[in-house]
Length: 197
Image 1 (cartoon, helix red, strand yellow):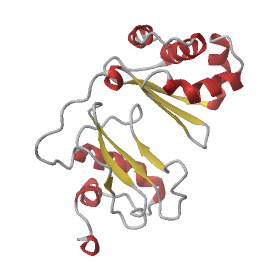
Image 2 (cartoon, helix red, strand yellow):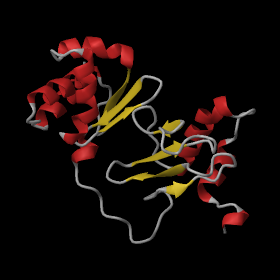
Image 3 (cartoon, one colour):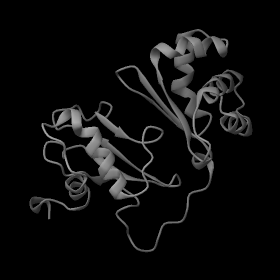
Image 4 (cartoon, helix red, strand yellow):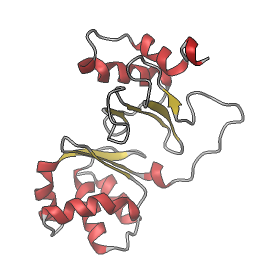
């Protein structure tokens, strides 16, 4: 049980009683002690958490989908039954001012130029949260669907382009015939192809 996450939930003073119970049930299972807290849940895990919150599983799912209306957080529901939930002080602290000079490790979204993945894939810097993210779609994927690969906390916490390239290279392994070097992935993050220049 994460006492840090539970204390954070109480500090948010969520007015809606049902939403507060759902948020507390999530916090009890969360990991992390810093500014970013969260957990991955499978849909099969939800009935037990729903009982803790005094709800049935369908109402718990509905509450999860609307929880970010009550507190700043990410609740990502994937088609394979995985729920990624990320919250914490970094979501509710004021954003840091932008640097005077543009920096590719900041802002975004930026394009990801890997051949076969370049049409809808993006990456960028999560303002105020201090981490990079990536949403990767193979060109044949529906761009309105959830990304095939999502690099974001709590599964990944990357702070610079080198770490992002390494995380993407690892996540791409099931989709490519040979292991990709992180240096090559970094070039697709930072250098547009000749046709795009």
